[in-house]
Length: 87
Image 1 (tube, rainbow, N blue to C red):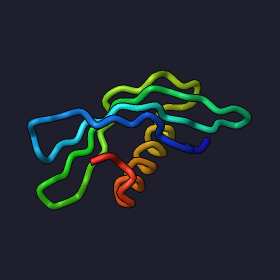
Image 2: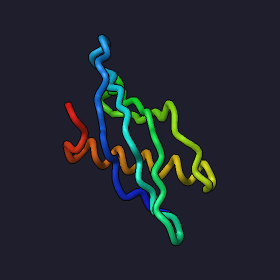
Image 3: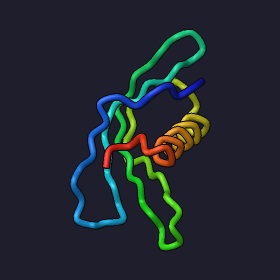
């Protein structure tokens, strides 16, 4: 399992400056197929300056949930660190 991309990523307006809400389509490469899943997630900056990814909603994918969520959070964190998320 590998997360390949986030498509159609849209940032939603939130009045709290340390939270950023996003929605989009997640593309996941499973053993022999590519699956797309709608996702809603939040990037929250803690007082220490560390960003945390919170997955609010994700369509069901026929794969174990914990490794999938961990991989998605790592992918989103790398995107954020490389300025790949819309501001």
